[in-house]
Length: 462
Image (cartoon, rainbow, N blue to C red):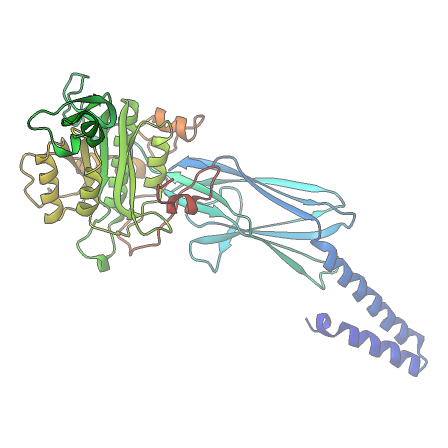
């Protein structure tokens, strides 16, 4: 360290002293120090010029229990060789690397993975690492710090590569029979595929007004043209609609933190129901009283039949955090207003408040088939009247014991796999069931071709 700061002074003094006392050896040492320091300094300054670092994630999405491969490469695109270069990569703490050593980082939730090598002129070196996805969420790899310098190691140089690559780990999915739900009509819909409800978004014509027609059905422009009241005629709805409502609350008070067991159970059930609905050609949607990253509104995906609908729902579930932005009853009230008549609501909860129970009962009285998928260890604490309740707590506890023991998952998730990873199946999680912990920070979501945080922050949710 002293030499790095005073090498010029030392070299000049030795050179002057040698000349002054007429000692060629001392002067030669001073000249040698000056020459060596100059060469080393110049080498260090040029060492990280035209260095190309690249990180490539084979997959942008994975399921819990899967292993992903990340490829790295560093290339020296100049004639000056590098006797040593150190690459220090920031990686997620909850995704242990299989074939490399990692060390603690100053950033919460991250680890450092370090690799050292040398580069000749115009040489490229590549390597791969495998990471185990142990926990759902949204993660990033990077930034990366490159460190190199001269051949003597006297003047190290550093370069920060701010590029980050994002990965979203989707939640576990299971088949409905393994949750204790019937594979066919688990929510009690009629056996007939014909629907008696109309889709208000599809107007096919007008007719004369009939007593009892609601005011919102009247077409005022057609009424003005014909000078008689005219009512709109809607196309009958040909799709079954299902809205999955996820209650993120797991404890009565926010300051108590949250119960990660109940939260993960609810997310697994919500994702499994959404997958089942997509396979049975439902127009499926999702709401939750958690917020999008970088946004101040609840998570909301309206029911739809878009080919990417299941992917969007699973991504949203992957980024769900224990933070709640509003009571679920308020989020439900706003979402139900935009549902077509006869749409089914599947509420998923491990914690139930009296206001939420009352709101569910009112939605049921409005004519919406409603079912509560209960994942708690105790029975629901409030009377729900004629609302159908499926107690999934025992089934989920059995599945958790299987996963903790390393047994294979029970779902083959064909539709979800096509949306995320068509060529791989999930492996069992190596971690057991977590204990209650304080509230942690929220995650985000990812699309292959977009900034995930910006996408979820948009008013339309993506």
